[in-house]
Every structure is written in structure tokens, then in C-alpha cells.
Length: 334
Ligand code: NAI
Image (cartoon, protein in one colour):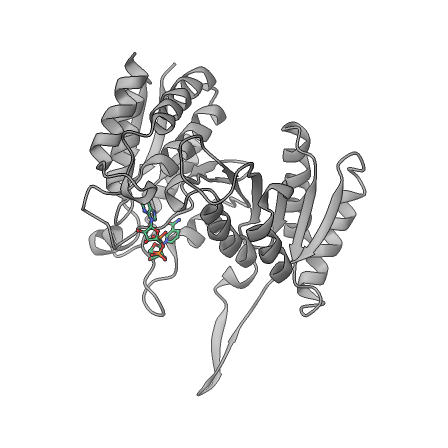
């Protein structure tokens, strides 16, 4: 079956890791027509828009996109393309499975948790202003609608995937109204899912428990900012940002991307680990019904990682992105 999918190569290591995925998909004889679109600084230079209209139209039409990371200027410049994209397409759920992979060196074993991050509001509303010189107000928006929607997503995901528990992460001891509303919404949803155990943790204590006993966590549901931070922390539990995938899911469309950013420190050096984007792309294949090919590629990746001879530098190896990609292609073609 042929598919048309929007592709955003992105910035920094984005073009390198997306190219790797395209090569591996070709090796698996997937029939995909990629509609390539720029975003961020590249698009801004070309059409004076960081999130061009034709890109949004392409995703709305195709319903599915694979996205490389996009650089966001710090403390200046255009607003985040990632935040803009998630809002424009109402991709309200950010799903990030964090698991040990055989052969990937990490501090822990037995980690198998799912991060469900609210993707549309919180401090990412982008609403901030200078009240008077020297005083800035940044608005943290929490709504019952978005909190209920993400909690329902977390419980549904738990049920469909045979997970054991949903934990809401919050700071409602301090932000009694904002995080209080998030928590109240999670509690209300949990009462409709009594077969799935539910508990709550304050975000700071949750971080401590995560770095001591990550194997005790299952599905975590978090407001946007905590979800962003805890995602990177959890990536560190299983070998780093090079191996953790993600999906931004809405009712109409889905954008698949790794947790990591554009990694300017290693961009253009053929050093990036494409595993995180490849695993995101495999989530995408599952999503579009190409489960068999996804499994075949997953198994090939698993064999290369488990064998351990060809690994990128973030995993204590010395293979280039190209070497690692070649090895997976060879396994896929076997
Ligand atoms: P980063 O995730 O790009 O990099 C953090 C560290 O992890 C760096 O040392 C980097 O070399 C390493 N790393 C990340 N991905 C890797 C991979 N695939 N293989 C090997 N090593 C990898 O985070 P940073 O440096 O804070 O952000 C850089 C830029 O990326 C910023 O402009 C940020 O806004 C943007 N960003 C974009 C995201 C997106 O498009 N979804 C997500 C996160 C950050």
C-alpha cells in the first residue's frame, strides 16, 4: 500500500536522522511519497514564516507527518515552531514511551514507562508581557477541558495497551488553582476507570523516585512543562536522548518526532544516533497500519543494538550515523 506523508527534515541533526529513516524505509520496500517542507529558521529565511501555511496544509491533507527537530531561538526571535505546530493542529497528546533497549548501555534495567504530556497549554501558552521594567508576567494556562482530555487519553492508552497504573504528576501544593484543576480533572477521569489503579505524585518527589526506582512507574500524565522536563530526565534513565521516540497526537492528525532537539553540538558531523527518530517513525508505521514492516524494522534495529558492534558515540561506540544506518539496512534486507 502506498502512503503520502509530510516530512519536516528540521534543523541541526534533523536532516541527518531523517535521511537515515528514509534509507531504512527504502530497504524495507515501504512505498512512501514524502512531501518535504521546511520549518523554523530555514522556512523563515525563505518565506518569512517559521511555520509556513503550505506545511500545515500538507499535514492536514496527509494526516501524518514525520518531523526532525527544529531549533528555537533562545530568549528572542520567532516563537517555537514545535509549540505552534502542536497548537495549530490541536495535537493535544504527546506520547513518549521510555524503555530499555537490549544492548543500549544505561543505569537501570526494567524501565518501561509511558509519558503522556499535555501538549497545548500551561506555560507554553506563550502569553507573557513586561508589567513594568524589570517585572515580567508569564501566564500558565490550565483548563478543565484540556486536562480532562489528556487524562482520558492516558487512561485509554493504559487500557488499550494493558498497562497497570496511571500516575498524575503535579505541583498542586503550590499552584493550588492551576495544578489543582489539572489534578481534579485527572481524579474525575480516574473515577470512570476504576479498573486501572491511579495515584498522584508531586513533581519534585516524582523526579527523585524516577532516578531511584524508575521500574516502579508505568503511565505518567503531566501538564506540558513538567512533561517536557521529565521526558528528558526519563530519556537519561535508558541511555539518553538518542533512543527515546515520541508522537504528537490529535483527533485529526499526528506528527511523529523524537524527544531530542536539533543537537547543534554534533550537527553536520555524522555522529547523531537516528534510533530515536527511527522508533518514532515505527510508531508512525503502526499508526498507518504498516505493523508488519514496522516489526521487521524494529527487529533489525534490535539485532544491531543487541549485537553492539556498531553503535553511535552517545552509546559509547564509534560508528557514524551512516555506518549505523547501513547496518540496520543490511539487517532489514536479510
Ligand atoms: P538537544 O536534545 O538538541 O541536545 C541535548 C544533548 O543531547 C546534546 O549533547 C546532544 O548532542 C545530545 N543529543 C540529542 N539528540 C541526540 C541524538 N539523536 N544522538 C546523539 N546525541 C544526541 O537539546 P538542546 O541542546 O537543549 O536543544 C537544541 C535545540 O533544539 C534548541 O533550539 C531547542 O529549542 C531545540 N529543541 C527542539 C525540539 C523539537 O524540535 N522537538 C525538542 C527539544 C529541543
